[in-house]
Image (tube, rainbow over all chains, first blue to last red; front, top):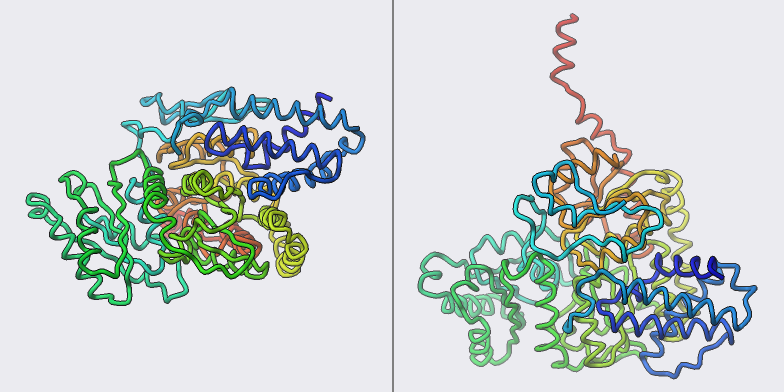
Length: 113
Length: 470
């Protein structure tokens, strides 16, 4: 499990810009919105997000992540629902830790953009 | 390895907090270079000024807008000729420069009359143009001119013109980044939402942070046209003033340069509920990914895959040809900020090159979080690098080619290394599939040109030897 979490975390850190939006609240929203959608697609092969513009944003980012996971991280094929859930939740926690909670970025909590 | 003090910085040890070498196993919670801070006295910065960030980078790109620079004429010169952002209306914005040409008497007695006269003169000389940006500069900010009041009076007097005032003197911030910010926030506060666009497609986007450098926008626009997606506004590549006033009507903001225009994208999200979709539009693989994201957003995946297949047919073989010849070459990227993280993996994944050093003039810590996460272990990451540090870095990493601007490029030439213009490009466009091939070609030409080796030959010494031997 630890290796799986690290591999997925590394893939996300190297590739996606949504984890590094300007402020902590943007990052938190993106990490939760996109990775929850990733989890659902991996488990059910579809998304229950509604049709709002914000939902479409989460879904389009999530689809890219899912495709990359399926292409690069073969361990995903061997995981059941519980395994997917645990992996994604642990990656979410790690991303929150690195990009929000313990980030050294001094602008993250500046009120105005 | 932690933050790093270069040999040349021994007398300014504060620079250590701005220089980092990535070590295995480290993450960005351990070390992150300081950035967007005042330049340290004693360091010869390569930064531009805040006014330059507003005028040269963003505002000056608009194709139907007079760019009135309220200050000494030199401020206009330095922001006029160095960027190559064409337009499809015969390059109006590149062919003209406007200045109030402030002189000593205007500084002593005030420059508002001079500004009013200049605005009226410009509109009279160009009767088809009805839009204007007015910029303050250091001189006019210091004497307390009120350009907004002048602009309001002229708008009332003429009746059919619209003027946007950017109050961002050169000294307003630590670098050009402040100019980006002031222009972004001023624009959303005063102009977005004041024009209703004609909507011609059920799919609409804003492109944000593309400045049509050597035709980048033309490449991107051709993709969106093929996909049947309407670009409400491109902020500001090949755009009109009024298009950018109508950005509130797009369904999503597709953001390339998050540094210079992320503020606007954030505010469009907060105020109008338009989500911000950040993409990389440089790089072969990145472009495909960017288009796929947009495709999923609108449910147009089939059209996107057809477009990508078409572009692969046109350009993949060429890209592979360059990759075969460039793999393993070492490259340094010394540009403004975002191109570091846009380019580092693109050059590695698409061309097999190794990025060994990166330097940002005006990036914030957000940019360093991105680039360190994407960049190599062992690579050097510097904020606001100075000239002597560049020499140190070249000695340490020995790059085969450097991406940078003409000023630092001349420094590179002194040590007989090739550089490619990373700001305005050598022979662009560089965006999209076509642009990635152009970029690869320029790198290939730079790396393989014999000129730097010939320049290093000491002809005088050789001549003396020949003469003494004969």
